[in-house]
Image 1 (cartoon, rainbow, N blue to C red):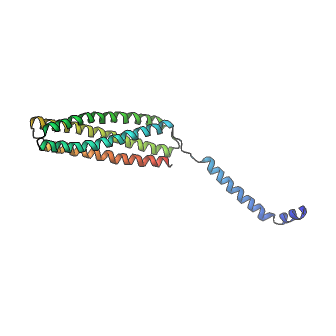
Image 2: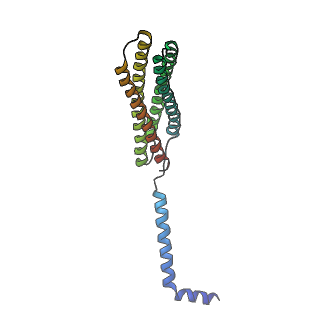
Length: 203
């Protein structure tokens, strides 16, 4: 029996050898590509800072939305002659403005940590995506600063209107438009940042 088996194998040696060669080449190509594949490497510090920054950004967006609603209420209260209530709401918004500024400082700190972790990201293509995300966040901080500045001016204008009856209509409208534009920019940049991070996660 063994003799018969090896005899048959010998007779069909060419197809067998060809098959073995093909399989060998396939596995060599597979393992070579596997061994040389660039795996995603992202320092834990980067992800931790990203998560922290995302929470801060979401908090800022929520605060900004509430502020925009209250600015409209302040205008309505002032126009209806309820100056005291309008001033109370202005004081609330001044406090909220300080919180918004502190959120900006916190976001900058998380960005600093993400930047420190940038050099540890591999491969280069993934690092480029992470850099794009950080750049988007930096632009967000700039829009955040613009929003806070516009909000401060709006609150000062409303205070002078309520207390002294100053005519602020044209200037107020201009500053409100600036604040709204900055708020829209923050929302758009936040969406862009999240899309870029998802791209990095799925690299």
